[in-house]
Length: 383
Image (cartoon, rainbow, N blue to C red; front, side):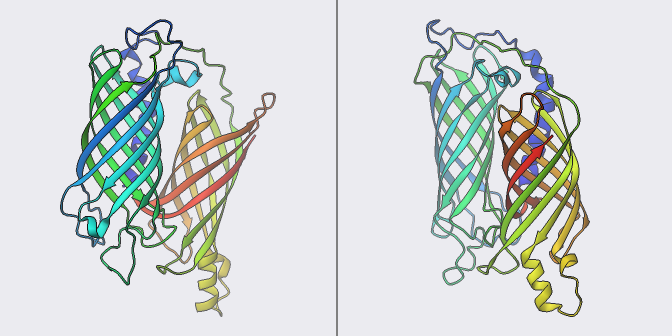
């Protein structure tokens, strides 16, 4: 599932480069009160229905039936108080509260989540508007894998999970304060293999929502001029720490240590390109090597992984949405397919105005064509 999300994130910046002809930065949002001072807070209530996409034959749960749920979005219409507002054509940003009732609820249960949300404009007319909605956050699932209860409940091995949603949103403006919306998209639940099993749950949904401005809307957009971008190549090093169950469901959790070194280049105000080498050391694979192959003396080789990696970071203020693609040069005791993907979020912790040096942190999820391997917390230095 996450391979499709990665594709969307990698193609999105290019689609927005061509979308700039749809409107000018000075366009009016609605004929709002000129004294509003740009508050722009909105509430959106959505109801949806859909079904589970069984993406692997290993998914044993009975998924027949209808998935139903509801969302409450608290959004703010940006209008130019940050430079990136204009670059992304004044998106809506905020939070989403999610409730989901899975099909076959006795086996799959319910989900409750809180997500960060951004709605990116694709087309904005007087009455019809089209947005791309991206959301990511945490969810609590009521039912998880328990061999003593039901071995067919094998989609998720933990109550706490990551949830990602991608939606296409069509809006019809009713007034300067209200609009009705239709949306369709995909929502993915996964614990990134922090605890096995972790096949993930994918639901395809469609629904209707009502959006209402709970505070005055901004009278007009006020684009800020984007400052000069440092386009020189910079060196970048990162340290990562992951944790996963290695091979055995409900077994011990093992640490994974990651080192990355490479080059990065910010080629405009909202995009950064990366290329480099990445190494991993899997403590679970090291223990397995010592226990089962004590005479071979290949612990480091069996526990290590090396890869060539390229990536793109989509910048939103101090945040960055990251998509990486890697190719293994060496794999240890936990062989995977030759290519892997990563999705994650970075946050700029500190930047020197004089030298351009940066300290940043982030959270990444590594997977192989939608099959999660482990979550990773990272800290990095760019200079």
